[in-house]
Image: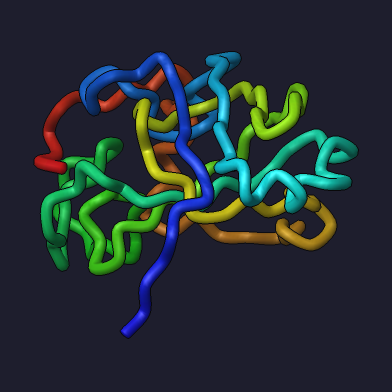
Length: 159
């Protein structure tokens, strides 16, 4: 059995799924804060030198999973592993956000696309040299990513 203990809570201006940006890029400069539980404050040492961090979190509003979903940017059913939809077998989300400031156990971030109250599972530094390939393919999203800026959750998903 695998179990995870949240290390903190994500605080954002988004109170429900509808209207929440669907990716950090669509969030623009949306600010939020990450409240790390006090027992994990020491884990934040040396993080302030990074401009961006990776947040891994639990899609706490997701209701079971679907093997196939119709993604936000499409009208065709796709396998859930070919999407970033929240209705996954293990409802884990990932966002790369800008780290603005650390104050004790509070991280100030921007580019946040997460619903307020979301349990945080882990934080990792974003390192472009490690985390990104120079050549990549975008599959079915190839022709659709240009429409991403400003894209918000339209409520189609039953989280």
